[in-house]
Image (cartoon, rainbow, N blue to C red):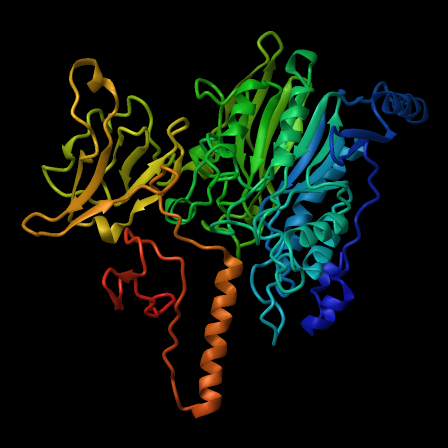
Length: 594
């Protein structure tokens, strides 16, 4: 593997010898089936079959030629898949990638040499979301150079690879005008006939991947992972066509996990920014994924990245028993590089199919590629359920092992009848945990010093409603919204509209926490990255223009003015006084507070 020549020239530096000298081993897959997916149903095209019969014949030859008693023929259910989390390749810093590959390739080589189906799956976010060459403000992620580089790397493992797009893979905003153009380049460079993929890795065992296809068109944060309606419809139909009753086993791959998976999320990052789950900002489609899982026991496992967290947590794998998650095991996939991981661990995953089920393993890149067995899953043919055994390990012995808090029935933190002041006996702090239902069905709670909204059906966190600084030291009350008509008898069974208010004892100030127009409460604070970047560039251009005009010794304070504005005011100017605006366009400092 080597970076494209033009990229090497742009970087003005040679790549590490460890990467330039690597040559993948000539591994032939046992049974490689790839979907040529266009519009409509998937068509699976068989390229070559080197299955059990082929290796049985080869075994006979080995027995005769080497005068041995027997040799092992792989089961038709065996397979090995290596899974890479967020790569965020920076072409200036490649050593961790070379080391990570050196840990994974022997596992794949061993599988392929035994006639076991082997493949590599990348969960996306392939490039670093920063400028990577001097003198240019262009982000590296999502560019042609980035995808060329990533394709070279993923091809160098010596087995077929599949890739799904993450939230940074269409970030080539200076090179491509639209998401469609960027997506076309992504698919073309990685040899993908469509954003999704299908690969039959063993007998009736299928790998299925879905890609994020929206960046520029994101309504809110561009860090949201969005699977478009066409892919979602295709996925639902495809899964329905592979029922567990006929022996099908499906393994799903997406950049972010679906809502309801129960995987650990970072409240101070993905929750407050509203980008935890697939289609996070779409109240309907965000729930469709878990419904598909619940209705189809053929989905045995779902792998995702996005959070940059390792596998050393109780909720880095979640199991199906009693959780309303079908027969599916959900597993987080960590990062290979020290630069990308949030907790200092460097992990990738290996999944091994067996005649009875499958094993989920961790490759620990900080421990020389140590292979750790995390979970063994056994199929129950009668019920099509998965029986799971988790395996203990010394790596789990740390203070943060236990799962992060999310509301759960009977957890002792539920406020059953929220009315009046909820914290009358004192103020809430960062150790307070409680949750309640508003009369409109919304689920709100307090955790880590913030008021958070949770999805009503899965109790997954959606986003921040009230920040720490706004909640600190204040009282919280749920009151009658004063919009409810008088009632008598059965008429009073209709839910009354409520309002959430914050206030200070002895102070005349009261804050009404208004719900959004769609009925949700959590704040869509982070705007589309493309627009924010362009605004930042305009601010820098204005500062430079001012210095060019008045001298480099000047230090201008550059403010920004923009819309839309949020207010209960219905007109820009006050009634009867057109000289005095009701809504000001006064400029603000748009930079991050120092």
